[in-house]
Picture (cartoon, rainbow, N blue to C red):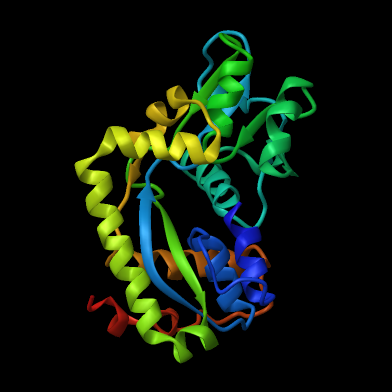
Length: 254
């Protein structure tokens, strides 16, 4: 998960990491110094909710009784879970949130120790493959929440090595062009490197908008998520920071 990569970066183990926007927002509000060099992609369906059930209930039917929902705390799946409860007006007293690592969730759903999981791919698809015909999938409507995947970097390293940072951004733009022009070969590369089946890669590929850029939406998203972090006591700060200090637009001129 990206939040663990970010933690390694903040600890000095690596110079760069690829988290989504929630861990970066929390790191900034906790006083950490870092840069976000670019977005590397977006996904409007990053964390579907997979339930173990017979039949096809609506999400309101499913949560008409108390349910245990497993997700990844401190990451985008937790925020997506919050959006499910908010958008579908699900009573909080009918939901018990269970913190688990992504690789533990399919087994938890299999053993019925949880009733649902909210996590990023490929784990939802793996769960559906494991229990064919025994799962349901809920997704948020388009526009409710779009996950941004980021290239975060050690601030001191970037300040000392701006030309190397520019070179990495240039390479990412070339990779973006390659993916757009060679989708079949790109899928093969991803399947080979991740060890996930070509069928799963092909199934989820269209969910991703792979572009190296800083979108106009990112700062607004951070501000909304920061208020959520304050309201849910995830941070001790009560003030929304200036997230523009995370960005280095000068490095984007590649």
